[in-house]
Length: 337
Image 1 (cartoon, one colour):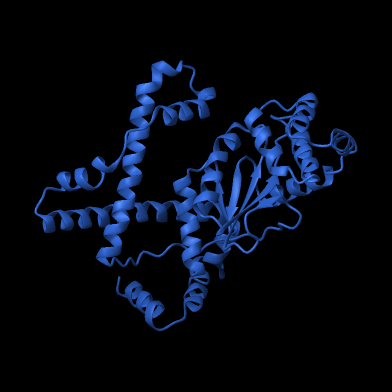
Image 2 (spheres, rainbow, N blue to C red; image 1 turned 180 degrees about the vertical axis):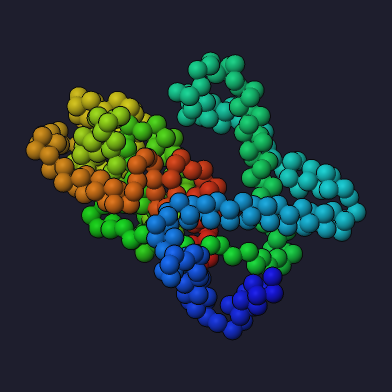
């Protein structure tokens, strides 16, 4: 225990952080007939899986730490005001949240209609309660942030060493400022239901971090289960020739999984594209090589499913929530500043 504490103190106050990482990388984990196996050897063979587990543990530790800090701050504030904690939360959180409107409830239902095999009237109350609880949670988070600022909270929990990958974004469709501090590169399949489900989250992120986040699209059509996804990806690139990649991208997801050749032509027509130019682009496979390049890059990265995306080179897979994406963006903005 003393040896570990001494090493920690040396890293914290004497050695440079890079020296600490170097010492950690060369840490001996095993020895076979005089051949040393170090931590960096293990990280090379299982880096992706180990990094994911370390990040998962860190996120859990951070969540529990934030909950503990929040509970202490609320208790202190309640004591200062001479009220119970429940009364304080009712005054500052619950009573400030407006009930969901009928439009909000209907919008939620329409967005999830394919996954809810029940008529709207039968789930209206459940959806109202869900939205109300969601609003309360969001308001509580905002209130806790205010308490943290006023309480001058300092945390010492350090994230694990990050694994970042270099991704080429030249020529890839993107939106947002090229000078943005955070770049999200997303690999997607236009017939993937999980890719479709996460699109509103990306829109919310771009709105929330206006000017600070750039979104880059890459294609990963899963041919074995979505045989029309590859041509849909090519069609979106053809639409890009007329500056309408994102409009076509959104239309594909809105109509997913319908991506037969006649569907692709219909979407082009609805968006006002030059039909002749679009048809020629698609017929001669102008963007086959570009799509294959994305596929090759995905294979080299070990990607086997969609959606998969990278925030400043940090991998995050699956249909993640706005909160999960925002957490990493906040970390990256904090590092940049």
